Image (tube, rainbow, N blue to C red; front, top):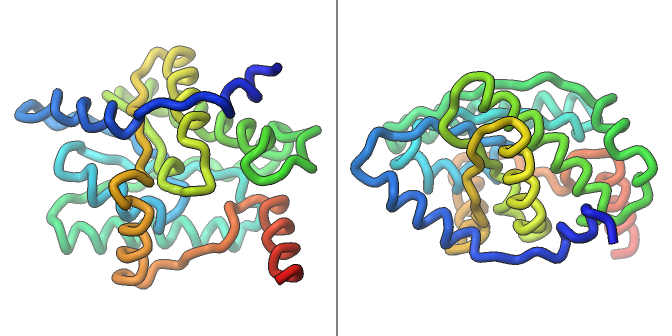
Length: 220
């Protein structure tokens, strides 16, 4: 069994670990958190939940989005969300847009193009995005880094957390565990998306996930 296949089998109480981490920081200087953002809807609940405890920079690095217009639309919504939440809660999350590197994504998943959503192609994609996030966190001195991807019911939190820890070791930084779908996090993200009129895409971002979504529509 490959390392990627082993990742798909791991399970742990990541939300509990996050709660304990927040308790440990209570009453201390707010840590600097670099939070990888896949899109505005997924970021909405994560920000609402974390902003009282962390100084957050959203890091938008998503080379898997193979259409430039889609990429630009999503990042503009992330920036708008940050401003909307600032007006409502008084905490401002800054937004940094990473390099747009679709060719790098295609190279990373080469040979895995026919994998289903949630399979080994996604593991390769997650590793690429978390690697870049960890590298940025280490370079600019963030206390922690994490990702909003665990909020999705379609994303394997065990895989994402294992990859985050893996990249933290490589870049000598610290990964913040999470399973944001817990505590009705995904439900709350839908409510916040409606409140702020956020654009909710119906596929992850790559051409392969888009094609699979279109096939599902045709079957329906």
